[in-house]
Amino acid sequence: MDLKIFDRMESEVRGYVRSFPVIFKQARGSVLVDEANNEYIDFFSGAGTLNYGHNNPILKKRLIEYLNTDGLVHGLDMATCAKKHFLETVERVLLKPRNWQYTLQFTGPTGTNAVEAALKLARQVKGRQNVISFTHGFHGVTGGSLAVTANAKFRSAAGVGLANTTFMPFDGYLGTDVNTMAYLERMLDDPSSGLDHPAAVIVETVQGEGGVNVASKRWLKELERLCHQHDMLLIVDDIQVGCGRTGNFFSFEVAGIKPDIITLSKSLSGFGLPMSLVLMKPELDVWKPGAHSGTFRGNNMAFVTAAEALDAYWTDSTFADETARKERLVRDWLENLVHSYPGAGLSVRGRGLIQGLATSGRNDMANQIARQAFRHGLVIETSGANDEVLKILPALTIEDDLLKRGLEVIEQSVAHVLASEGASAHVFKFGGNKR
Ligand code: PLP
Image (cartoon, rainbow, N blue to C red; front, side, top):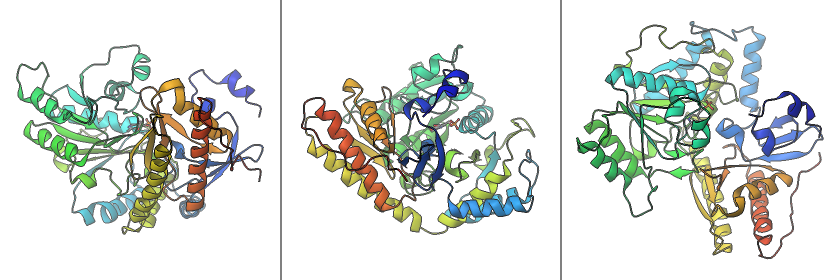
């Protein structure tokens, strides 16, 4: 495939085209098709944006109907019928059944803009600058979000100091024997710890980019308690693992916590359309009108598909139950794989349909597995500080057959990579199929 135009015209900053060096022309459900009609199973889902698959037919139908009526596409933050319907749907499907009250802020369409807004709001409310973030956390690459993002690759690109953040160890960061929440508590309790009283804590319940690190329910519950005790706002960044990725619509629900501020984006529109949202407890809404603005806060096409997705998938527990079933399937498969190679340094972690196959990090192994898998028709990425974790992120709507075929490709790619290190060779069953 001729990728020369991309090499010639596009900045060196381009990323995923390097991992998947083909030209994609179509996508349906969990299958991508390239220019030469090769098919690929998608275990990447637009980095968590396509929880309901590519071109989801339910959402596409609704969107086409809307466009055919010349419904507004762009609306700044004016009142539109599409936005009204989305607000009503959020209230009916997400908030009322949980007996929750949150005020909604529509930010610019990227996740990082929702994080910027959440941080600004927390600092305004508390009148303090410092925010606690966690090791391996990822919250976006604009100034404020980057300051709470841990990875040096992203931080060093800023070119300016990234201040007003204190990083604390995430759950498990210091090994299974160390309770990192006890460390945070000690730092907060001690007036001479050197920690400036934070306005807020920002956390992912499962760190998507940071290596599929899962915070335990107990750890999250303790974090909420410390936030209350020390007058800090709890911000849960549910941009990657919200919208059903871990089972329930919100990833923190299993822990029984209620964040002060929640950020959502990625799979919120359900169709891959850019859209971001901040949910805040009503009493925190200290914004002055227009104080956090943005031209693209009113993506009405996204409102239409987002409302449709809520009605299609979230009015009862069927969809979450299905995700739990698929989680077990994936988890069993991966655990079997790990047990087949004792001593290879592999392990599994994750929640719902975000699962990580962690490697020892030796010989760029996870990237090698991902590259090998792509050669055989599977789109999959790595995450973690040193790209040491293979991240399994299929659409929640993926058919069992495709899910199993994707897992087979992983199994055989692992076998291939380990064989090159001395284990016995295996033969592939599934490859990039011609249509
Ligand atoms: N927060 C989390 C948890 C993310 O995973 C991401 C992106 O991967 C972001 C924020 C930033 O979102 P965006 O890339 O849309 O700016």
